[in-house]
Length: 174
Image (tube, rainbow, N blue to C red; front, top):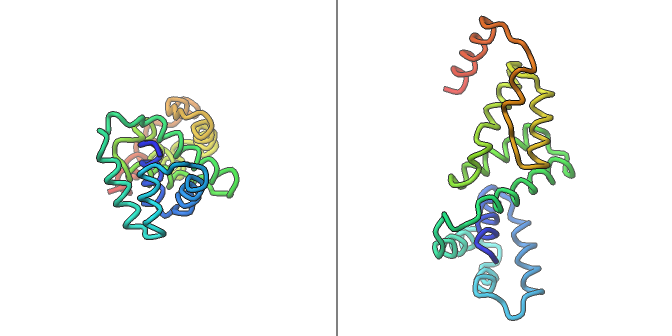
């Protein structure tokens, strides 16, 4: 198990997606010979979420955060979200909520998409077009880039109306 995989599965487990982790460990128990120390230790945890998180956390202490390839972890998580969105019929709101939850499960990751949730709220409030947001979000799920500049300039907004909507948005979040 790489450090990137450990962080990925830690984030999944924190967010309630334990089955994916168990499938990974079971596959490693069958395919690895001899078993790596981390897989052996994880195999003794069974389905005890707290023990699993403790072992993964201890394993991750062996490496500095700067040495974990955050792009790899983000790609794992993005692919997970894309799979939920495309194959399990998650709504855009559900998929955006996953981005938000995953992002706050580990503050080192997701710097490029930290505003996805905010843009989704803007789309829900009609400040930007929902269709434009969905298109950009789907591009992000496929290619890993969320270019929010594409959302602006698509629609002319009257300044007075725009400021009222922004004020409403800001007071709604507070």
